[in-house]
Image (cartoon, rainbow, N blue to C red; front, side, top):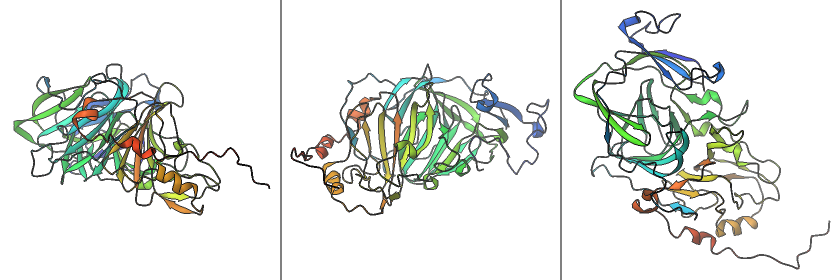
Length: 430
């Protein structure tokens, strides 16, 4: 179904009339279902800001054995396990387990790269990479610590949620709200990045990410007993817990509300760009934003750099040299990023921390200071993205050491930059 933040309703066509008429909690629900509310905001939030959905399910989600602590693997929110590193950081493509190797599913393949903040105060951000070669069988995952924004880079994934199914391919993104059960099926080995935040659509009446292009699933259920036990894995306060039940949690026959998972195809982003001179603020490339309590300041903006026209006159067109009060974590889904055509590879990443200088490499600078300024296609066949955050993010031990993908030669791409200063330069006569 199409829309962003809409009031949706859906029922599996196998059970027509499963949604109660005129009320949420009838004494007896149609088909003998249980009514369960999923709240994404406090009851006291004003109605325009209130997020909730009603689910009508075969058994309620409360029917499970107690949770017990399980190993977290490389998923962490310990931001102090290694010393901070203010350098420009770049990672080569992360290793994806082959189909012939040990089976690694979506949860086992989660690795935290960086983050900041605290799950107990529900204020923070975490960025993870997932690499896996196996589907989740009779187990699902939910996250009490925030929403997951998932950016596939290699291989499509089929995500089953309590609201229905979504197939998400590279060049698409999806958002899974806090505490929703999901299971991830894969068709080959896959990889991608994830951000643990809560998102809203960016501002504007038209252009950028249009609300009609966001898609949420339709109701689908399975009434399936699992005699060997179905495992639910819960991320809670930065730790993983597991419990058992004897039935599939994807037993929602019908639902209605405005708190739903959704996906979005990045090719639908209506790009805005400068048509005269200089650069507009990069906020023109924002797809989704997660707000802080300070107006205009984000926990994270999800920004993309899609194919577009470059037409600015008497302008250095690539991204400018920059020191930022925000942290910039970038990834490349496919293609070649315009400011660094070598070294920054699909499946890799970079982090330019708060006030860490960054910008085009030497080759890019030299080429674009002498280029003929004519209309040209920029980033053709490319999709780069950024999580920009007001948090000063710490890199994990896995990100700095264990993964062994940190490109320690990254700084060298700026070493050839030389001075062009000419104290005898004179302005041209008009």
